[in-house]
Amino acid sequence: MPGEVVLRGLRKAFGEVVAVRDVSLEVRPGEFLTLLGPSGCGKTTLLRLLAGFESPDAGQVLISGRDVTALPPHRRPVNTVFQHYALFPHLTVAGNVAFGLEMRRRGRAEIAERVAKALEMVRLGGLGERRPAQLSGGQQQRVALARALVLAPEVLLLDEPMAALDLKLRQEMRVEVKNLQERLGVTFVFVTHDQDEALVMSDRIAVMNQGRIEQVGPPEQLYERPRTRFVADFLAVRNLLQATVVSIDGGRAQLRTRGGAAFSAADDGGYRPGEMVWVGVRPERIRLEEGGDNASPPQLSGENRLAGKLEDKIYLGDRTDWRVRVGDETLTVAEPAGPARVRSGGQSVTVSFPGEAVLRLDSEGSEPP
Image (tube, rainbow, N blue to C red; front, side):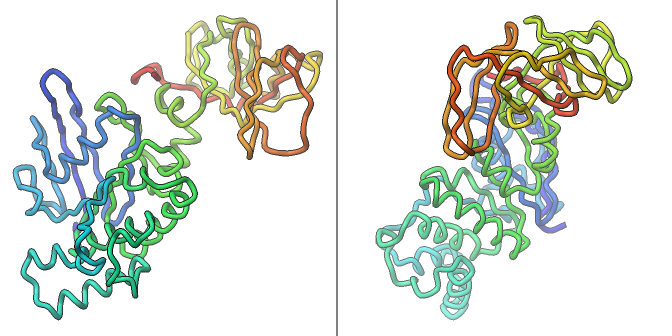
């Protein structure tokens, strides 16, 4: 189908460094798929293999049902928007957008019509005679988008195009780019290391680490049910704990960490008594109360209440992160902004969280950095 992307067993090495390790992935027509991961994980190399800027050592790239593995970039039905927009400073906005059409020797009337439509599409109508230097960063990005889309690619590739924008503009452009993609119905493959960008914009996210895809799924699925330690850590679970399954009772697994913290988790049949497991608890799922005398053993109801002592406070505006020592473990607790709370280091507190908030993580997959 037009706009469908299929990657089969792609592998790419640079000398002894393997950048992409046997990656297979399908991107649906009209989908916004994000390749998410830290620097050096292989996401940009994978995008370059899709664009044709690099040749794979093994594997296939299929676009719209056609094998394009051996084709150069200009013969693939794709276009790319880079982090550095590479606008021609001596050309007007309209001239930049028209450049690709002129290289393809389109007629003047067709070029004028398609450029006008492309500029209207990205909300730059009336700015066609300006130079890039007269535009804001967000406007320059929209020119780059218009220049790529005016050629009517079946797939648009975007390599961290918002990295140079300030936070406020980045937040605005996330919504604009996603809305544009939905209006056009064009397949977008987007590369970023920013989890917020990925969560806001994507239909699906592929999390990459060390050249492999660790998990693929909708944003809600990856955020709520990360499968591996790396995915959990990269998507800010932060409280990653290794624990032993002490027992299973009433649909609850009773766990104990090496540091002595005891708590329960909802058991879906994946726990076995005596086994060592990795689990995670999101900071926003933990509640904090003054006083450490409210703690209690894990309850069959699933509510965990543990005694601890405050270590640090990190104020972040919309929330405050507290680091709490529980036994030999340190937990991060996120509290939303509200009335100022007077707390100090060393203060006794109780942390509580439901057993359903405990995420069971696969032992397979790469470890977090």
